[in-house]
Structures are given as C-alpha cells and as structure tokens.
Amino acid sequence: MKNLLKLVVAASFLLSSLSAFALDSKQAQRVAFEAMLAELKTHYGMIKFKEEHFGITYDQVEQKYLRLIDTATTLEEDAGLQPKVARDILAPEEFRQMMIGFAAEFKDGHTNILRQTKNAWTLGIRTAAIDGHLYVVGFNKTFFNPNSTYPP
Image (cartoon, rainbow, N blue to C red; front, side, top):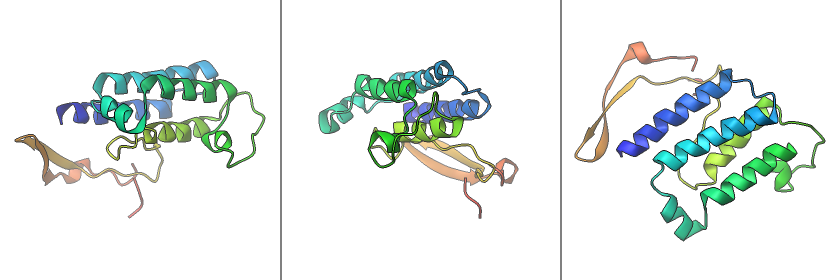
C-alpha cells in the first residue's frame, strides 16, 4: 500500500510536470517517457504478476513506446484504427494521450494517467493507512480545486 501511494504521488508529479515540460522534440518525449517508466520500475510491485498472467514486461513496453515516439505514431495508428499520418514528431497532446495508453498496458485500474486540463478538479480528501488499508478520514474544502477532473 505504501509503494502504491508513492507511485500515485510520483505519477501525479510527473504528469503535472509534463504539462509544463516542453514536449516539442523526440528527445524530450523519450526523456518524459523514460522518467515515467523509471517510476514504475522503482515503485510498481505487480510486474511479476503481470508478466506471469498477461506476458507484460518492462522491456516489451519500453521498446513499443520508444518505437512509437521515434516513428511519431499514435496508438490508434499503430493498431490500424486510423490511417498513419505523416509527421516528424507527435504533438504534445498526442504524446500525453499515448502516455495514458502506456499506463493501460499494465491492465491495472490503480495505475493510470490523467491529462492535466482546465476541466479537471481535485477533491481535498484526507486519508490514513490503518492496518494495511487506506481509509478516507476527512474532506478539506481548502484543498478542493474546481479547476483541476470532471465538471460537476
């Protein structure tokens, strides 16, 4: 549970950084992707289970996403759902959307990436780890940011 909380915090930080980080070169996109992958390698405790049950490995995922970045190909294009568009680099929004797909590769509802948008909002909840479980123990209105997940 402790590692899961670290992963969520780290991923949130990285995604916030992605909004401000210039994703205007393949190198910048590779660095951003590698940073997210490094966080998973450091904090994600389910990879052995994912490999045994789904055949998912860090190396396979890394190779796939570095190829997509290098060829400036979206996930939809790679899957044949959309025709390939000729481009030198993925647009920052295309890259951010691809990172959501990256998180989905792990088939884990606790591992996800949300794009930072003006339509996002955060609830100010307080939590506590009690006997190995995470409990919501309060709500703090000062942390409520109506401009940060989905409109009401």
